[in-house]
Image (cartoon, rainbow, N blue to C red; front, side, top):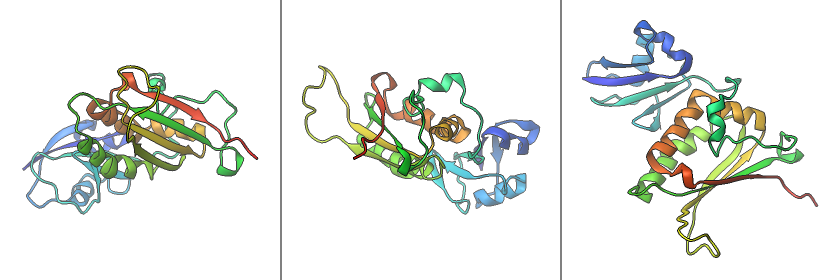
Length: 211
């Protein structure tokens, strides 16, 4: 059987010829863990996903699967200029606080689905991929997406906002690194290529008003 293997970041060094993406012929019943062991990448691979959903390395690969492999994000690369336009990445202009007890940043992102995208498909991706990846990012205290129910009063004509993300950020500098990492870039790519219309996204950062 043939599967496509995509090694992100420095993991490509384990691929033949240093390629980042290859179609590989594997024996039926091959698990992700066995493949990584054969490549010598099992100790360096931090997160794996099959067809856009995070999975465990014991998962058996099937013909036609797309396997994405990621390295750890902690201490990742500095943000690339091209990433700063993404709503989840946009840096804060204030003096950054780092912890919940020291004025944490809370970012809100309001999203509109692309035409033809079924809410059920987007929400399945949220549960199986987005939430699981967010839990591994060291900069995020908590993250949840909320479905908007009922009318939005005084919304601009034509607005079709469907979901609101609430992201509690422990450290804005680390958050920027996390989103600029291969794991963060892949998450952003899937979000805006497959589900949400980035041109209609509203986003802003907040900080608490202390008593």
